Image 1 (cartoon, each protein chain N blue to C red):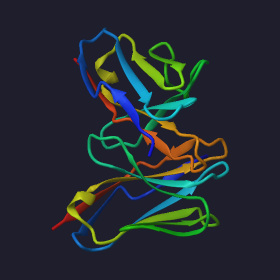
Image 2 (image 1 turned 90 degrees about the vertical axis):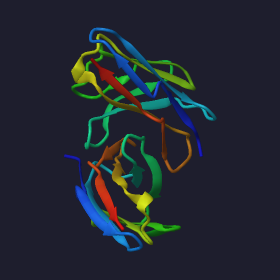
Image 3 (image 1 turned 30 degrees about the vertical axis):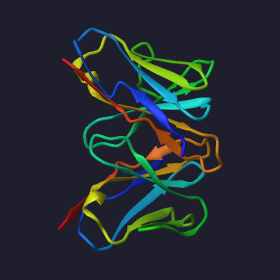
Image 4 (image 1 turned 120 degrees about the vertical axis):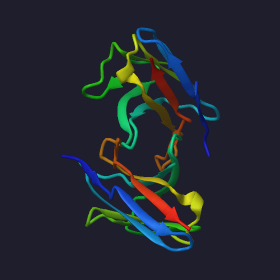
Length: 116
Length: 109
């Protein structure tokens, strides 16, 4: 199946700093990628839909200026958590579809962010 | 509104069979997905159903009834490695996935 790679897998940062997470589709072109966050023992929460070459579509309640999404190419989307605070500590996961009829989502490995 | 319901937690014995149920309400419907997620890892795809009936894939099978808004995931010959959370997700008319909260499956020897 298609492969989505996410980096870094773990990051620890100080409060007030910014963190960038990369999501790459390795063997297919993804015009659309999805960014989720997941708190412990909870389901995936869609944050935004990243569209190649255009602005991301954010879900209600997600701050656009805090979670900056850039989808500059068909294989790369980035999520930048700006001025991170401890409450932003979470598991962030990206996913993409490979364009097949099933609509199956392929997930990155996830990035665990800890803000001190 | 859109909603997915699945049990929070289930316990089963190694070697046995377990069925995880999922009911959904969505605006339009374009398929039902099951994903497996081990603690601290990203979800991995298990199955996709868009037509009524049972889809079998090795030890795992998935069933869908569109008229009832109901699906189940059936796991046979349970192994300890099957201990994980199982996420049910329905795709709505906009091709957006609506996720359930997941069912934590605990396998006992």
